[in-house]
Image (cartoon, rainbow, N blue to C red):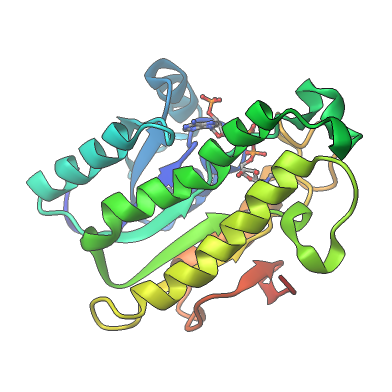
Length: 240
Ligand SMILES: NC(=O)c1ccc[n+]([C@@H]2O[C@H](COP(=O)([O-])OP(=O)(O)OC[C@H]3O[C@@H](n4cnc5c(N)ncnc54)[C@H](OP(=O)(O)O)[C@@H]3O)[C@@H](O)[C@H]2O)c1
C-alpha cells in the first residue's frame, strides 16, 4: 500500500453497504484497508469492484476478536500509517432467528449478547485499538440505524435496536473523548443508511447500496463535516 493519499479502514467490507463504501472512497482516491472476517469472501468481493487506480488492501478481521483489531493496529504502526477515516460498518440482524423478532418478551439473552458483541462492542474494539493511530482531523463513522433511534422507537427486533442505541451512546461518548486527542478535530458521528437492499435489508428495501453508502462516505470524507457527536441520515442531523 502506498502512502500518498488518505487511509480509510472499513469493517464488513465484503458485501452490502461496506463494500459500496469501500468502492466509493476508493473512487475518490482513498487508500482502503478493507476488513473482512472471511478472507476468501473478501477477495472475491473486491474483485467485483476493483478498477484501475483503486488502492485497496484486504485485511482479515472479525470485530469480535480483540486480537484481530490489535493486529490491524500493529500492521498500521509497522508501516507508520495513520488512519484518516474509520468506518465501523460490520453488523448483524439476528432477531429473525428467534421468536424475539416479533415479541421482545421472547428475546433470548444469548442472541442479544451476540448482537451486542458484533454491532456495539465491535466498534468499541476498533476504536480502542486504532485511537492512537487516528490522524489529525480523522473521521469515525459508526454505521447505526433508525431502529436504534429512541425518538422513533418501535416494537420488535429488540436485540438489534438495543445494539444500535448503544452504538449511538458509544458515538456520543467517543466524540467527547476523542476531542481531547490530537488537534481536537477528530469527528465521531453515527449514520443511518436508510432501508437498503442488501442481505440484511432484503429485496423489498427502498434504497440501493449507493444511496445507503452516501451519508457514510460524506461523513468520512467531506470537508463540510466540521461537527462531531451527531446522528445523520441523508446528510442531515436526526434525533437520537
Ligand atoms: N441494510 C439496511 O437496510 C440497513 C439499515 C440500517 C442500518 N444498517 C447497518 O448497515 C451496516 C451494513 O449492513 P448491510 O445491510 O450491508 O448488511 P450485510 O449485507 O448483511 O453485511 C454485513 C457485513 O458485516 C460483516 N460482519 C458481520 N459480522 C461480522 C464480524 N463479527 N466481524 C466482521 N464483519 C462482520 C459481514 O461479513 P460476512 O460476510 O463475513 O458475514 C458483512 O460484510 C450494518 O451495521 C447494519 O446494521 C443496514
